[in-house]
Image 1: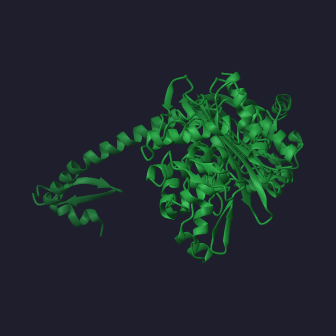
Image 2: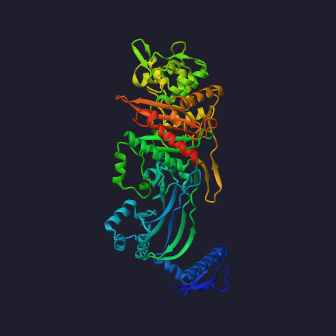
Length: 631
């Protein structure tokens, strides 16, 4: 029976059912309730249909835009265009001496680099690209591949293939590699240290950043040159400047399509030193002459302005050529420096510690006067030539006779200072504790804080130190030796010079420094060093004056009469310091001038050279003569 025959009887006028749809050649019949439900459903879903239509329209229009309007642009991108970031090294700041003379310059050198991230992604294409680079640069492809693989193919930092290229070589390579993807000829500033003798330890040098430095300092970048020693290291953050960045678009063949942005590098800040490069050069030359004359292998000269603490000159010999490091020192040359028994990389001026010898006596005299152990009128008969304590004998280097403190300084009278330190005859003596405390107040036994890396603190021994280190008790003889700068007392040339500068300026211990001002690339002062007093009022002005008179007397009638004919009045003190077990002595000399208005304090040590007046004296004399002849 067909569907028509089933429902024909209900069609004529039946209100319960009615025909509403015809489909597939058949009638479908719905109740009134079902019809109302369908109409409601249509009303509910019409917003959904509207949203779908809108979305569809947007998608179609976007598709048209991408394929037709921007089709050519996207086709270029699809062919392999890339955005490369190239860092432009900032020139490091210049370093000047106190008179405005440049001590270091920036030269232009070039390097050949490859950017691993911009190499083809598949191994075969990458190998083909490296082979083309090898042919163009004459660098074995295996060498290039090893360097890139070690760095990592996904790294954005460049891998350096060749560096320190001259301009002509760089231009030739640029032509050969212009169509090679990932290869770049980069221009980089290189340090050129001027050949001023004695400056290497002061300026230091730069070198390529190491992996450890990259990990410990987030401001460093791969392949960057950073300060490794000297002022280059201390003031790295000021000198380095800010690198520029160039963003370029290249196609799949490495051809530049356009420059997207170009941020110019900002040069580093410049340093102006308190140091006089002419004096530095003179001190170094004269010291070398004395080393040669005395068959000594090493020595140091330090000169300070006692009014400010500024370093006027600082020389440590033997030295080295810091340009070797600036251009990239070879492993063999570096090994030679490391293996050299004289250690030319070692800055003796701030890191070498020596027995001070009689250069310590002005400080001991000041301590005895301030403590009341002696006065300016205390007189001792030292004609006996030696002090005997039990079975021990403490000799003097010559018989002096009657002496007060001024004469004792002038003639370097050991017996008088034995008495001041440990007591003898009518002088009670300071004792080891007070002696130690006063020497520390003069800046011994701890770093002074100069703006250079590697400063040593030296040693002023105590009974506790001797027991702990040597497993021995402290004896009166130890105090005697300490009072004349022998025994275990150790000081750097910088510490001795700075202590003498405190005698020269009336009793202020100042913090020594090299850098006077820091200026930005526009010449504006961004930092200026002010005089910093580390200690004062620990010796009265009257007692300091007595010590100064003793040092002046050393020149007029004592052990430093070689300075009599200088154009200014000089105060000085000789020193001869025993070391080792072979009766050898270091030669010391300290001085300041002019006597009434000190502008320079200086200390010289010539290692193993014998008497201070003979080996160190000429260095002081010629240095002072130059200083006052070349204001």
